[in-house]
Length: 165
Ligand SMILES: [Zn+2]
Image (cartoon, rainbow, N blue to C red):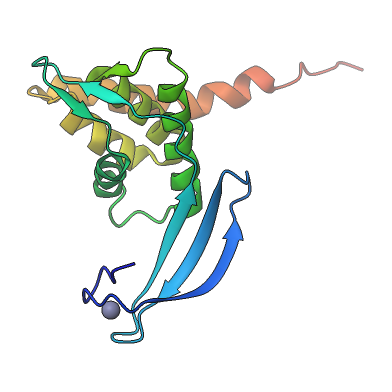
């Protein structure tokens, strides 16, 4: 596995263990050349998927590209890489279970937005702004308002009625 920092091919596995949901093996690696540390995941691929772009162009589904766009959205946010890995696994499983091998790119985008919403609000808005190609500030406002509403609503529903004595 090539070192992402210096490009050396001589990296070593320091630790290897399954993720919490046992769907992947997480390996911590170290590069003896530059001392860089990074993590890789080994996982099952059930079948090949094809993404159909809005233009109609068909491209093979590329998990690494999906990961990259998620990483960009999560830049400088402190989110456990294992949670990110689980989210992406979930997206891939959902895509794989959709029956046909062809998946509209919109579906992938919607799933990523849903996943990020549960992980990190800032990343969600970042991704949504790129994905939806917002042109008007109004769209941002709507999304930010929705985000502001959701955390308050949930506990209010769970609150037990006050008993009078
Ligand atoms: Zn290195």
